[in-house]
Image (tube, rainbow, N blue to C red; front, side, top):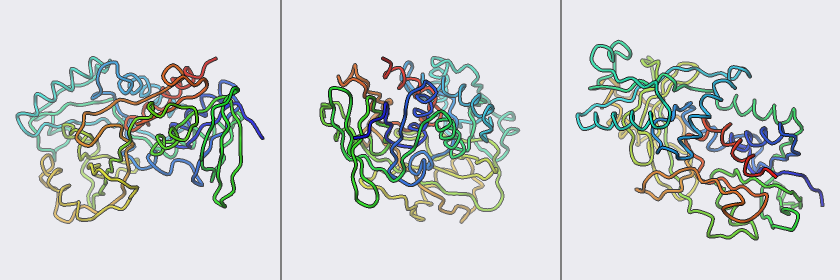
Length: 369
């Protein structure tokens, strides 16, 4: 049986960031990816936002890794030619009761080390985004946008330059903890299976991380959290593109609300909403546009009838139940589950892309000898 020092399961943005980090440290790394290319699921079906770290509870992994990851990600993009833009965003309050929420967000952001938020209203808000109708807004100048696929290609290229390899069409089926590490059974698209051994194993399976965890013999199944799929649908705007910044409403329970994002070409798109689902489904129902019109017109009344068209959908791997409180990233290393050389990553949703470099550092620390 072939053996390698480290196997990373999943070639999304987190798996690639981890592979890069471990390869740069001199580790021998193979990434197993069931698809035939990188980042085909959550990593390529999101808002492509570099988050500032405003919303998350103080000292949570999301707060710490987002703020640290944001600074590193901007530097990485500049150094590696990854398209990005620090365009800023507005968090808008359209009703009196939402003004208090803006204050809460600002307080939480300060607690997380984000000191650049500014509240604006009246003429200042109108000058920034003339078509927005709101009582006040928080301006986040350190929020930006990024070409997520270009980022993943940069991570992949750097990992491979330092000896890592990606095995596409290679589906994790099962692993068994052994005295020297792990033995994995891996399937291919032709239905053949092979075995490979490793000393270190990282589960960065995204939507499938819980299924992978439950198929590691020797891992206590009680350490695997529940998983829930929260689908986010996006619609693009036809005609004139009025916004140059990101526009967010105050956040809802499981998402940051139907917001305006801007891609690297300047196109405006709206989403995501939240739709709890049981099975993978990336189709966007055109009828959901009616909910979008109502949500968007709260802060942009001039949205024209028939101005939205279905764009794409993504699915967030939640560890919270529908209607439950937002949960933190779940990073289980040996101190949590008792298996040396294993790190499981669960519930890595937003701001996972922003936090990817910092998350990779955390995984490397958990695997340190």
